[in-house]
Image 1 (cartoon, rainbow, N blue to C red):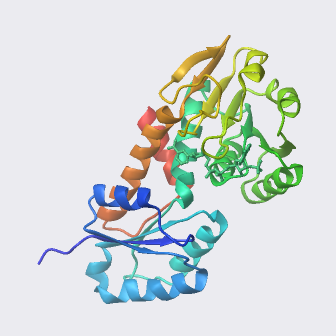
Image 2: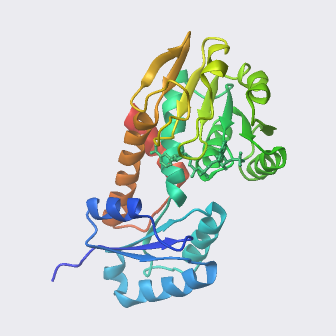
Amino acid sequence: MERKHLLYLFSTDASASPFDINMAYDAGFHAVIPYGNVTEETGTLLIQDIIFSRGPKGAKFTALFIGGNDVDLAETIRAAAIKSMFPPFQVSVMIDPKGAYTTAAALVAKVEKALGGLSGRKAAILGGTGPVGRVAATLCAKNGCEVIVGSRSREAADRLAKGIAEKAGGKIAGAQMGTDDEKLPILKGVDVILATAKAGVEILSRSALEVLPAGKVVADVNAVPPSGVAGLKPEDDLKEIAPGIRGIGALATGVLKYDVEMEMLETIRTSKEFIVLDDGSAMDIARRRLR
Ligand SMILES: NC(=O)c1ccc[n+]([C@@H]2O[C@H](COP(=O)([O-])OP(=O)(O)OC[C@H]3O[C@@H](n4cnc5c(N)ncnc54)[C@H](OP(=O)(O)O)[C@@H]3O)[C@@H](O)[C@H]2O)c1
């Protein structure tokens, strides 16, 4: 009898994301089994039932996806799940909390290609304290790009920047960037602006955009109208949106994000070896797909 491909989906939220469930079915899983409000303790207990029930052969047809809003908790669950597995009772794992690993990887890979590299560049991240912003900041910092994480709250920005610098290293600072007056002095001095604020929030105004010096790349991930950057359409891909300023819209990044998440899901479904895919893997895939 042919084995069924099963995906267990652990979410830190009450409900698992339908986005990830739909993509998992499209990636060929026969069943996707969601668990909400998963913690380190419940995740560890669930993993034991997952790995032992199908035997070593069945483990190759079983995979785990870790998602949800809480990036730190998702990482804790990942560590606990991996610790509680041992050969040959191991199932492949993918972690993508709130889609932030695949989205941020696609976003950062797009701007890296547009700039011809990130090393020695300077980036500002508007609305940078959410899952997508913090992962984008981490990926930029890891690749030699100096980062300024923006927030309406100075403390939130400073706290996040300190946390990322401790974990990932690199040059990263926080800044209060709630108003145009707070944003402009910083935005004038960077090579790239990433707009990662909450869905439906315009975080970069037309008046601010028009006084920025030429030569910058501005990339937005907000696909819910209005766009995060005034005048930038979701499908724009390096279109000039103000004199000398090129914009990448949410759909241009979203198509790559979709491809990256699909490849990661197909990989954990079909891999005969135990593998763990995360933000670094997402970045490698995004880069390869853009070559
Ligand atoms: N294109 C794609 O494929 C794709 C995939 C996934 C997500 N997304 C998009 O990525 C973006 C970021 O997602 P996320 O989950 O990381 O975001 P989020 O956590 O909902 O929000 C990010 C930050 O936005 C700031 N913010 C909230 N309300 C604001 C307001 N009224 N004015 C200014 N700033 C505000 C907050 O920062 P402070 O409170 O610190 O200021 C918050 O931490 C969203 O637009 C989401 O739809 C796109």
